[in-house]
Length: 107
Image (cartoon, rainbow, N blue to C red; front, side, top):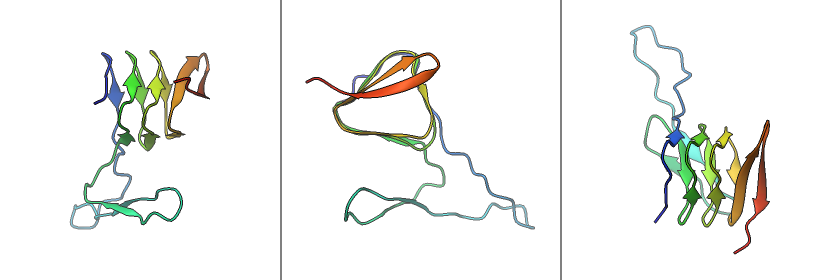
C-alpha cells in the first residue's frame, strides 16, 4: 500500500501525434522496457503517466511528470517537481533548489 500526501500531481503523457486527414489520431502502441532480460510490456492505454511501485511514500505538493518510474520502497520528499526519470528501489528523492537529488534510503 502506498502512503500518499496531499497535493500530488501525476501528469499523463500527451498525444504528440498529428491528426490524419479524416481528423482522427493515429493509434500508437506504448511499450515499456524493463531492466535485464525481461520481455517488454505492451500497454493497451492510449495515454501513459508513470509507474509508482509498492510501499512508496510520497510527501505533499509533489509533481511527477510523464515517464516517471519510482521503484518500490522509495520515498519522495515534499515539494519535489521532477520529469521523466527512473528512481531505483529503496531511494530517497529530495528537492534542493534548483535540482532534485536521488540518494539511497536508510532502512
